[in-house]
Amino acid sequence: MTARVQVPKQAKRGEVIEIRIAIQHPMETGFRLDDGGRAITKNVVNKFTCRYNGIEIFRAEMGSGIAANPLLDFFTVADVSGELVFDWIDDEGQTGSERVALTVTG
Amino acid sequence: MTAGLLRHGALALLFALTGASHAQRAAVQPQPLKSGLEFTGAEVRELQHDDFANPGMLWAARGETLWQEAAGREAKSCASCHGDAKTSMQGVATRYPRIDAGSARLINLEGRIRQCRELRQQAELFKYESAELLGLTAYVAQQSRGMPMKTVIDWQNRHNFEAGRAMYYRRMGQMNLSCAQCHQENWGKKLGPETISQGHSVAYPIYRLEWQAMGSLHRRFRSCQSGVRAELLPQGSPEFLDLELYLAWRAGNLPIETPGVRR
Image (cartoon, rainbow over all chains, first blue to last red; front, side, top):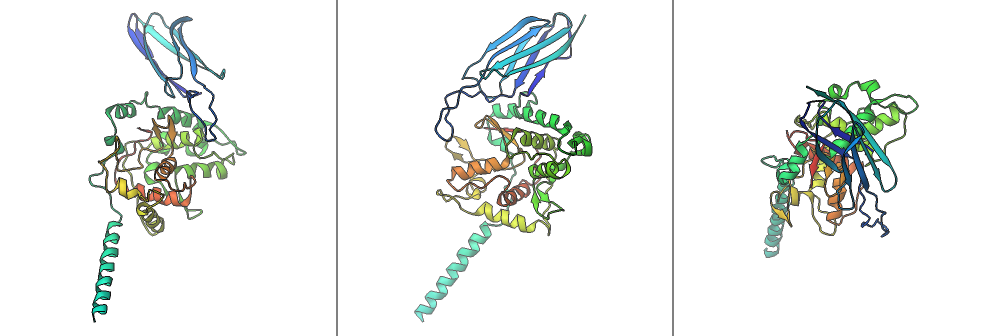
């Protein structure tokens, strides 16, 4: 699963930073039929978490209503230098992960 | 005498009709040239212009990875021969489709990438519409983003151009519609809730919200064919390549937008 993450490389302590992640995923709703009229099994990224130095700062539980290739956009306060870890899993059990380093100054 | 006159009249009428239809069928570029973006809503425009939110970038990012990956019996990557795509592929997409020197046939960007896979890397061919082929095509075309199309029609490709032009004006399917009837003669008007665009090819491969995925120009052709209830031609077919050349010329100097976003 391809994913793209956007986090500022550097931030001042106490600064509110924007975190964006785009995940390539079909987000199959389970409501569609294939060319033969058979139901296509639901397969969506159902759980997504973001941890900042091990502490969970954001979690999303997604379902059929989310479009393909979801883009998540959230904020956090830059506290200390460290690592942001993103993890997600879909209905088929496929997992994805990304990690990004953040330097906090001041 | 009367019969002769009538025949003359009928002939004159016939000439007038064929003359008129001939004039209609001339290769023309819409004036003024407008990108498909101008026919979409503000949200779609915003999505395309945000390099992070643009979902097509996910495919292009995949292409960027593939560019570096060694493959096939030769264990060569695209980069082994072409180096950094950001410089070597700049402007390349503005000249496609073009005549392939080896086969003397028209070839588009997808075809060129497949040819490289087959002959240079000796690797397994990417299927049309696969994430890999779309990704690499998008990544290569992206290096020409903002550069105007530069299609030259000369003795080598004129035959293909004429075939493409003829196809553009040929009615097809149960609806009996040609490309031109919507995109040349009625662009800017409404078709249901949609505004008919000029049908340019400069943003492909595009991310279509309707597809919830990236798709090639030939997929779009097939969608249109399905819409007018015509028989669908296969991806990469010579007819589609000819049409692609005609569209590339018809886009004049519009800049490349890949990866584009459309409804």
